[in-house]
Image (cartoon, rainbow, N blue to C red; front, side, top):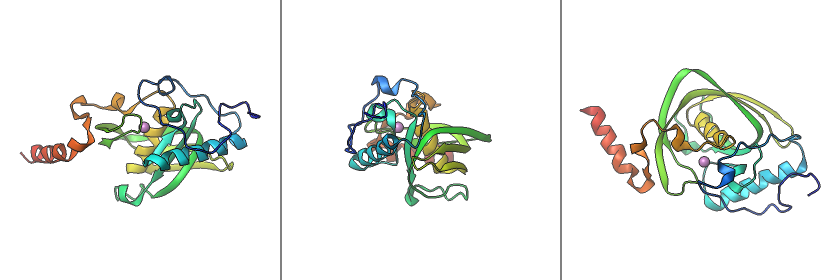
Length: 193
Ligand code: NI
C-alpha cells in the first residue's frame, strides 16, 4: 500500500459490516490528501459494494475502513418534490462537513445496510449546507433539503460512529421493514382521529 492508507489494492466490493462492528462505533480519520489515487479506488470500492446489495448510500466505515469518505445518491423516486431536494447520481465525498440551516426539522423513515431489514422514524434538520472534496479534487458546497439532506446526514453520521436509531425520537417505530406499510396506515389513521 504505497499511500499508507488502509485501502485494498483492488476495486472489488467489500462485505458490509453490521451494527456492533468497531468501525461503526469509531470516529473516522480525516483523509490527508483527497486526490490520493487510493481514495479514488476507495470510491470505486464503495460504488461496487453498494451496487452489489442495492441502496442509496454507503460510508467507508461500513466496509470496515475508518476514513472520512461517503458515497450517496438521490434517485428520482426518493425526491420529496421540494425545490431544494435535487436528484443526484452517485457522488463520493471526502472529508464532508455538514452545517444544519434553520430550525426546521423533519421526521421520515430510514434504513441502513448495517442494520439489515430494519427501519425507523428519524428526526433530522430539514435543510443543510454540505461541503467536501471529490476524489477528482472538485470542491463541493451545496445547500439542500428533503431526502437529499437526509441521505447526506445519514452517511456522514457513520463517520462519527452514529447509527440512525440514535436519532429516533420514538423507538417504538423501530421495526422490520416488512411491517412498515401497516404502521404507515396506522399513523395516517391516528392523525385523522
Ligand atoms: Ni447507514
